[in-house]
Length: 93
Image (cartoon, rainbow, N blue to C red):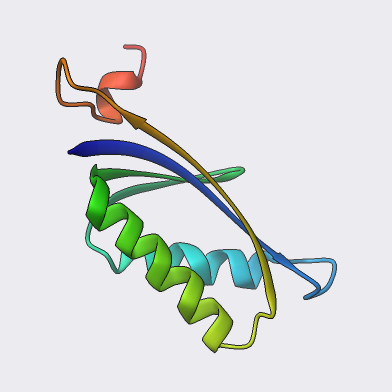
């Protein structure tokens, strides 16, 4: 099942600026090979739901393994059965 997913991963307790950690999270999500778009408050991804969830799990586990003790992760998932959803299809032209 194809999905459009918005992901926001917030490191907690790493200091005032979390830019480095957020960019690392985005880098890890990009390694999945799925379509991903960074925006001001997170990332949008599109792909097979199972692949997106696996990429998210890998990202969270890697960030913890790299020393981030606490993460607050927010995920919004959109799926459809009447047509194949795409990020490009959601944009106004």
